[in-house]
Length: 141
Image (cartoon, rainbow, N blue to C red):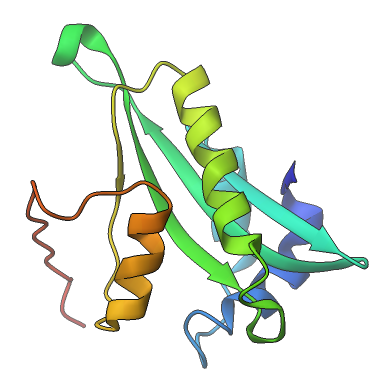
């Protein structure tokens, strides 16, 4: 498990095709901005020289809860050929460890997947979908 950087972009964009097939790659200036953001980290698991799983963690400064930050995990993905081997769980576990080290009092993870197996996976990772409700609004084109 390691932090990913700009040099991992090609592998990460390829891996993201297993998350959102057909997404256009980001513009170079967007890549630089994302990887330069001090509160955002990308983690990756490499197997046999190939990036097979990843997620990112944003640590958000906060003025409630005694000023403790909170974390947001997003873009959890495992290459389709490498699923059911614990790779996704490993990147999430690593992100959670890093969030706790950063002093986060909670970590939020949302998914747009409707598959109960995906929800069960996140529950096995320790997330509880029962006590909060997430609301999302997307910018219209």
